[in-house]
Length: 70
Ligand code: FES
Image 1 (cartoon, rainbow, N blue to C red):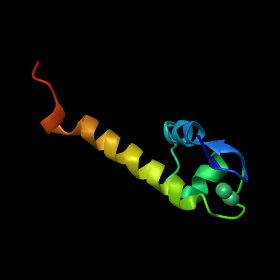
Image 2 (cartoon, protein in one colour):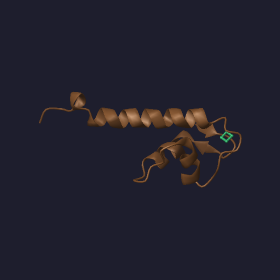
Image 3 (cartoon, helix red, strand yellow):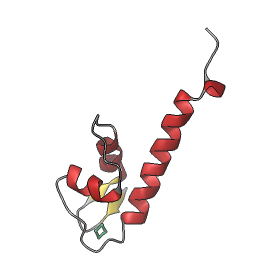
Image 4 (cartoon, helix red, strand yellow):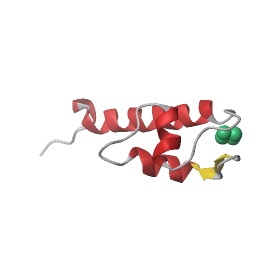
């Protein structure tokens, strides 16, 4: 799904940027990581939501409550 129509960025593009070792820490860095810059800014909230979801998912992976017994 396209989340930024100005730069034609998809949610997959944003998630891919977040998977790098030097993952962006804010929406502005996501644009830079993907080789573009914010234009109208309407997508910033959506990009932040994708970042929050990725952070929450990573936290769940590390959470001992979700770890399986070996
Ligand atoms: S929709 Fe992303 S900068 Fe305009």
